[in-house]
Every structure is written in structure tokens, then in C-alpha cells.
Length: 141
Image (cartoon, rainbow, N blue to C red):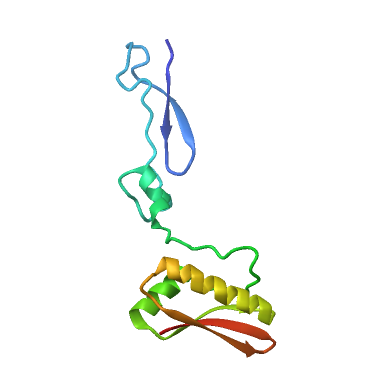
């Protein structure tokens, strides 16, 4: 019974040699190859206990969507703006609109939305004509 043992030498070449125990019968090393070390350079930087914990499903902030029928450019996040107005007061620019009618509709919708989102917060809307567009802002009163 002839048995060849493959041994790894320096580099990536494999050398086949006849085993000295090939005539003696069963070898303890038969079927056991050298294991290559795992490449640790490709491990993720952040590792949590469970695979499902890495999805980040709960880490997204809630969002109040702007309705499709309103024509707005650069809409501001409504919840963050409401929280800042409650905490600091002042004025928040909410969106730009191409026409005055669109700006009036956006202002009316924002006041209604904020009255339900933050009932204790009283806001007034301001519409400023700037550069051919209309800027809709909220001011805490």
C-alpha cells in the first residue's frame, strides 16, 4: 500500500513525498491536512452578539412624510424642527415653494400637522419671497 503525503513548503508549492509509514499500515496523520489560518483582515469592524442585531432596524429616526400634493423644494424634517422649536423657540425654515399658492397650502398644512404633533406648541407661519421662490418658515410664539 503506497501512500503519498502532501506537505506545504515555503511559498504556495506543494511537495508530494512518500510517507515512511506507508508500509507500516494506518497512520495517525492520514486524512488530516494542515489548516490555513483565517484571514482576519476582512472581519467587520463592528460585531454584535446576534446576527439580527446588526440590521439597524431600530436605529432609524421617525419621519413625518410630506404629502405628494404639496409642491416643495428642500423640505425640512418636521419632527426635528418641532423639537427644536419646543426646546429653543425662534424660527425654522421648513421648505421653499415655486408659487405663492403652493406656499400658502404648505403653511396651512404645517400648522395643522404641528398642532397634532406637538399640541402645546403654538406656531405662526411666515412666507418670504426670495429669489423668485417663496420660503415657508415657522416661528414659535
